[in-house]
Image 1 (cartoon, rainbow, N blue to C red):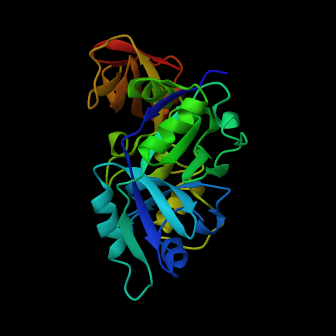
Image 2: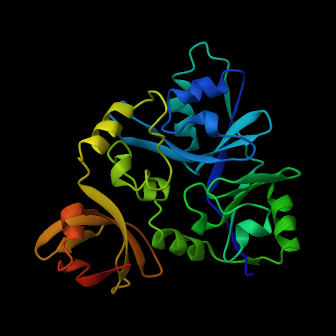
Length: 286
């Protein structure tokens, strides 16, 4: 068993009040009623037109729900959600005392008493541990104070690694990292792997942006996909165009250690003979 860990650039937003679940249920892509102390979920907030605004991991922390969300965009998330509070008994607060760590590698979830299924959750005193609800291959997340998490990791003889090590694993699994990989008010969930990563509940009732999301799925309107590649050129960087021959078929979203996550047209991905390149060098499909 070899467990690695790194602190993630994530922020915790806490929801309290008797209406917290009903408030969120009509807004986000995930069924909030499936979140419990034993299960976390992954979801997103969309525009009314079904375009991406935020994605987050949702957990229950005793009586309250919390969002594990992208650092630097937490105030925007709170502002957007607060517009819908009206008379609802719900309060949104930042929890600067809480940090988020990823523990990954062979046997990581099992070491913390978690099952292999995505979203399996448990508690160690004041620390929440959850198998990543997007894919268990990313290991698990630990949420609590920094000192308490480091103490827990030390008891498991885990090894601290650079964030880039985790980032490369994430890219290889084609998991988007918020606004690094998704365009705010432009990207749609089905072109961003969110459905494949358990981020949409197709059986829940209406939520903001649900109509366009469902239409995209059932009418087969997906035109692009996020795909991982090994870049032959270390100079490839986010924003670079992805080419197939003389045609621009996409762009690089995030890059780390020679791995890149790119948004590419489906027709180019389906053409096995296509010479897909960026920065004048081949992109090799993983």
